Image: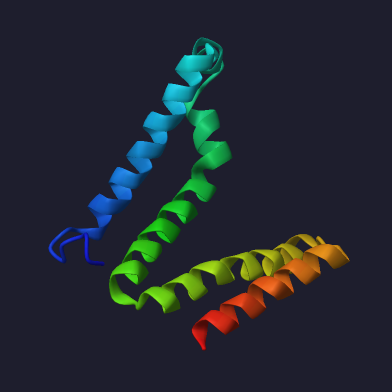
Length: 120
């Protein structure tokens, strides 16, 4: 909150974050020599079909994270940000029927307990 002026648009923060991810991915593809193979088999329609909905939801999530970061206290933001792991596991179970192992349930419980302890 202290390093970003209030006049900076949230959408430009999200755009810059996504642009840096694209640059990073292209750098990795070019450095290991697999860029040409990837771009030969790439098609815009196939990419939109495969990644359209997930990318839009991820964009909305990033926008909400930036708005939350600008408007919430640091501790509250971190607790809410960590709770997404719990909700992902819950919706993975509800939508896909994927159950968690005992160790995974214990880890989720520890994450929840840590979030509660931090907020006290």
